[in-house]
Image (cartoon, rainbow, N blue to C red; front, side):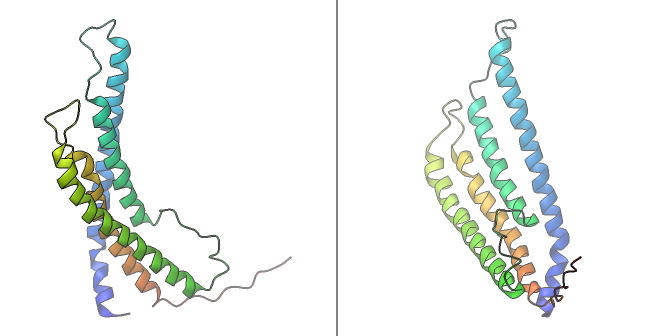
Length: 184
């Protein structure tokens, strides 16, 4: 295995920390989503009894925005765990080398998508997003509604670099021969 691939193993603790940070952020976003939704729903029904408790006008837009952050950041987390949707039905029928090549091609395609998300998403966030505002919060730019896409693209690129490193290293690992099945 080339020396530069072995040096990349030293980045694993940084990937682990970044993964934990993103997971923590996703948990906070979920808690905020649940809290705002509960406040909103309760406000619709409790307002008739407690006039001070109302349904905030901004709740729906903020919940949707937080949910979009959570969804795309979770997709980046799935890349790290190799838990994204993929077809594995033919893995037992194909040679191991073909599977390694297909894994590499798949990860390169996801990297391409992540680059598009980063570049085009940032372009949209800075152009379309910066021009509009939330209806219920006119002082808040819609930039924040478009910003999750380039952020997710960035984290997907970071985690895809680790996956690509693992894909390349897989070519240097000797495959164990298949064991003959024992029939009764």
